[in-house]
Length: 269
Image 1 (spheres, helix red, strand yellow):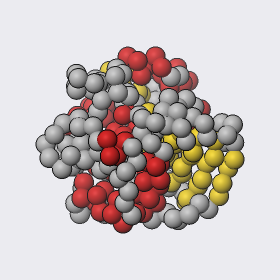
Image 2 (cartoon, one colour; image 1 turned 180 degrees about the horizontal axis):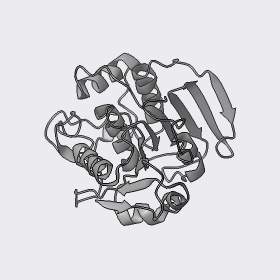
Image 3 (cartoon, rainbow, N blue to C red; image 1 turned 180 degrees about the vertical axis):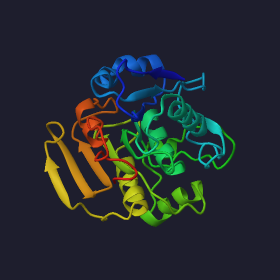
Image 4 (tube, rainbow, N blue to C red; image 1 turned 30 degrees about the horizontal axis):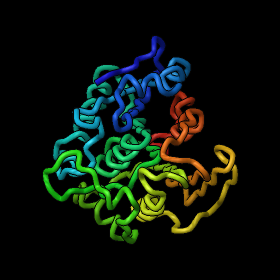
């Protein structure tokens, strides 16, 4: 586990988890965005996990363990990092967030679905729906060509059943989610955005069609749809799998500039 703890922390600081991409490292995630620099300004703590899967440095989003609440695997390892930070730094357990790109986005989907009792919100940039890479076995870090190429297509109800099976019997708070994907992604095909939309609008009981549309936001030629207060999706026209991160809009979505009782949290959703 790699941490970035600013010299000046916010009172009961939020926690921001930033899992890296395939063939990436915690150090690359740290240096690849401005999130740590912004932490100096706003006082949140950053966790940069490092994948234990040496072959490709991807996150395990396939095994039964990682897709099961308290089942083990990479997802539980990251949650244990969060619990350590909460205990050590008196951080706010109601303001824990995850954002990642590619494999980090896939892990963000897993974390929010498998551990909804831990996270307040997530943002997945060029990922896939929770369960799309499922091996239905103990196979760790398995690549699913069918999922990657957009051939795994399910109804919202089918995706919801997968999410519910990750934490059987859970009836509590569900984190809000923002998913983004490039239209020219040939690594994880853009059909995966549609599957994420079906999954999360159903799980979060949001509208199945957009309630509002923002053109050219958060960037030129990007279109963002809001489906309700808990789910948002963005299609980035002409963008490949190498989708550029916009730190400012992520910080705003997680409300990390805020300090005090009025901030977005699991209690103030």
